[in-house]
Amino acid sequence: MNEPSLLDREYAPSSVARGPAGSLRRYRTRSDAARARLHVREAVRYGTAAAERCHVFPAAPSPGAEYGAPALVFVHGGHWQELGIDDSCFPAENAVAHGYAYVAVGYGLAPARTLPDMIASVRAALSWLAGTGGPSHGIDPDRIHVAGSSAGAHLLAAALAHPAAPRVRSACLLSGLYDLREIPRTYVNDAVGLTPRLAQECSPLGMPAPRCAEVLLAVGEHETATYLRQQDAYAAYLAALGVPVTTRTVPDRDHFDLPLDLADPATPFGRLSLEQLGAAESHFEKER
Image (cartoon, rainbow, N blue to C red; front, top):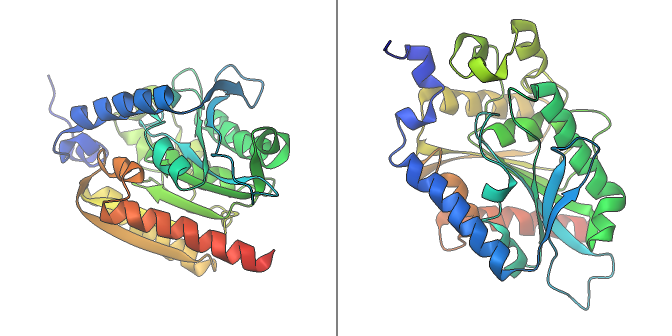
């Protein structure tokens, strides 16, 4: 068997992660637990494609929620070819406990779906929530926050850059790839099938500013140099476009266990992500 190339290793988060299989198992077991303990509306259609479904966890009833509750929308990772919405519900209990609805978005996987398909699906999910979908599940369409990990971070960044995308209150993007031009030369492309031209066209680094009031970018301490470099490059790009952006390299975390902090307010990054949501909500209330 051939040894992976240096470039392949740079795009393989597991090459430096400490226990990726255990983290992936926790995604599913904690998601299963959230679905068992909370009220959830499963596999809700948000579009016409078979893959365009989401799990919706309504917020707890609140007497003062005149316009509906805010929502945290999560888009999973998996190099665009693994995982799904059943692995994406682990932050739901924390979100609902803090007054948010929670939505886990599915978008289908390569090779059956292309990256443009996936980007369009994520944008369709956001448009549905900001249109009729959100209010039908008790969500205020003006108070949508998004979070995504790895491929999900990329898809959100690309979807929000489209001029027809709804504007969201905040985005928390974890371990994302924002410049895809090297992907055609890596093992990732065996399933994804990007041409050099399509890799350029699907790169958020070079797209218009995302339609988002503020962005938090984070990577784990134990990531490859490529993921650290891509975060720095995208942060500089957003700042040049005038987008308020905060970056974090989270100590003692890797590509796979960092998303689990979204479910745990006792962790430093879990607290930071909640603070971002709270600050964005405060700004919105002042505007309203």
